[in-house]
Length: 137
Image (cartoon, rainbow, N blue to C red; front, side, top):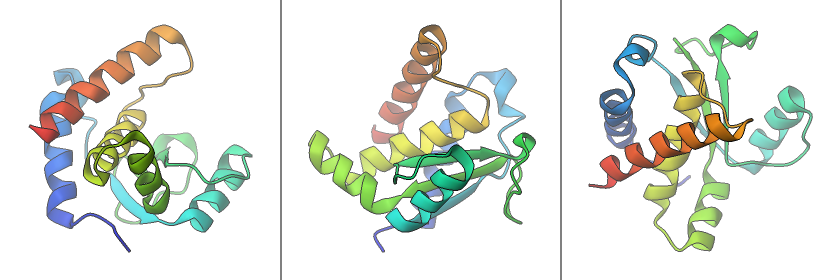
């Protein structure tokens, strides 16, 4: 319940494709986007990351030993709809904006972006916000 429409997701993915660096575009192919609730994402977070808590978004690149879904080319992005709704309310923004941010965040992880170190985090979040602003324009 509350998941965005398929055309909305396709539009976000097209915007991401137009905004990522050219050398990354060939890697951006057929991600599976899954919308779930707190219980499902908590289970995934526990199984794959050892964290027994729900979270907003998880990304599972196909080249990292995760069994991808049938539809997946580059990997899976799993978005927790109720969590994103709560986050949007807490930040005072629309669900669509926060969902676009989480979808972008997940796809950037599939492309190899990380935020473990400050320099890579700065680069990832700067690109993420550029993409989200383009989606909202």
